[in-house]
Image 1 (cartoon, helix red, strand yellow):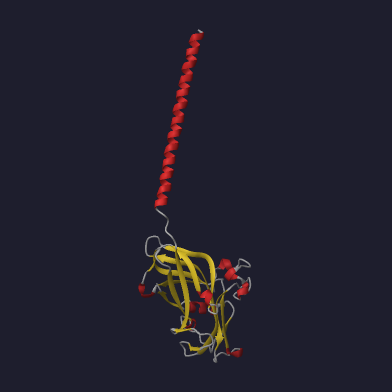
Image 2 (image 1 turned 180 degrees about the horizontal axis):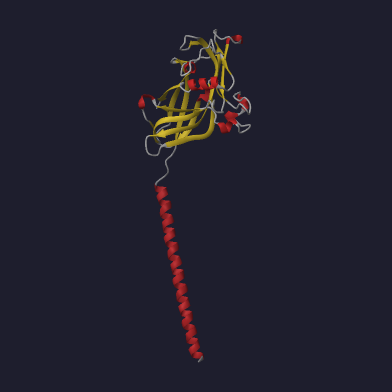
Length: 277
């Protein structure tokens, strides 16, 4: 009897060892397959590097009737009213490139705000990185969105010290144009247009969509940095769809229907987008 029990025990142990061996072999096989897949994935990534982003530089160039803006120089608007400009600035953000392929829009800058100030040449050039593709439009927000108007004290371009902020109730000045005109009835013949207001129905922020001159495509590749000029014509402030005569209206410094109408006008001031290279 003891011999028979020992044989049974040995048989059970043998079966158990065989099961353990098969289990260990199965685990080792899975480990080998997973390791092979992982290494193959790594090698593939090494063989196919991700597309390198390329510098995109945007220059804002201010003109009046195709003449470069010179501070203090007298020009004529479309109603032959003489005026000179000594201060001109505006906010832009949410810069996007619209592609010609199925990938659609490329948000090259979604969060940052830029204060374009023509008294500061450094501010009129902004630089980004963009994925290599072909594009046929550039879009951006002209002004400050409602959320940032009520988000408390902010820094950078939105710092109140920049002189483009009224109060927590009135929000930011989206665009500012100051100068002089002999037709102005204000002290010192001043013209003062501080355009702001984020509340409907007099929200003055405007979405701008611009195509490239001559219907060209902007092709960004890894061979070189890309530069474009966006032409800004101040005369648009006075023209349409709401004619603005300096002799009648030389100032606007509060939100309202007048500010909204002027914003409708200056939304048309981006007259051309030229690809430099």
